[in-house]
Image (cartoon, rainbow, N blue to C red; front, side):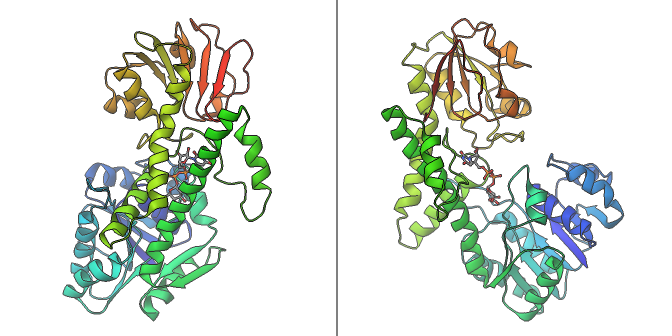
Length: 412
Ligand code: UGA
């Protein structure tokens, strides 16, 4: 089948390249010329596990353009929906992409993959399409891709949700996803939109629940990981997303929860649970500083920060829990030496004047304390010998060798 993917970010690229792998012809459209040129040269513009290799394998079926002149087949809208000041999402890119697509097609199907508040597809985007043609169908097909594991998640999903309005939408989407072995839930666009938000809100709540129990466990002098091991043995709970730590970050959970809260408020409903999750998550990273202050006044002290990415195996620092920690330490007059295997270049844009070190050793050299904030595998075994004071506070559960140091875990 012919597919056009509008927006070549991590969702668009993954979706397009995976559809090419399944044998479809894919055309990417993005306003970013640099990205488009890279795709044309067969170079993945972002890092995603396996993406470069899969792209190379399928270049005969992949095209890219920065104009909307050539729209083929089923059109996937994968543009960003960034947060506005009040937490609700900015729909401008999505509206523009839908309008440009509709202008350049007579019939066919536009599929919204961007995360949009329930009601958006039918109430806001459909009327734009209908200005140009009543023969174009619209559908909503949310993504459930984890950054870093996006291709795997696309090809091996737990479920595929298609929110359709007519037989054409259902037929084309079922056909496209046919090679993937997963249950397909057929519903309407508004339900599909809320499934996406509710899934992310539930996962974020699960993490936050583990963090809250973890904060209590810490006061009781016990290990929340032992507690959760017992809790997770109940099959109704399951062991996933119960890893306590400095809280959730990334481009999705914080943004989606804020959008859900803001959208519900506009409808006259205060989402108390979502609100509490966001508040707990804001406080959580600062707990590592409270633990550190048991041992020292941080003013003029050198603190090594290991881990800047919002999670391991990515260079993404969006909403990384390291950001509020570094900000607070700087406010208190500490000196920061930071290390991350992938995310330092990105963090330099947020904190241009802290010291970035190109190895764990250099970051620890003469440091008065060390905070571990991302669960990178290389943080499993660390040599702390060069530290001035061997005080280590862990915000993610990763460190294995703890001999000869003063150690505190955030929730254990
Ligand atoms: C998340 C969801 O997992 C995807 O299903 C969803 O499609 C995606 O958002 C999205 O909406 O696009 P992602 O943001 O890539 O994916 O990252 P996760 O692996 O879910 O981790 C999010 C944050 O939660 C990270 O900061 C991670 O360290 C933290 N986390 C995760 C915990 O603190 N504890 C856990 O047990 C799990």
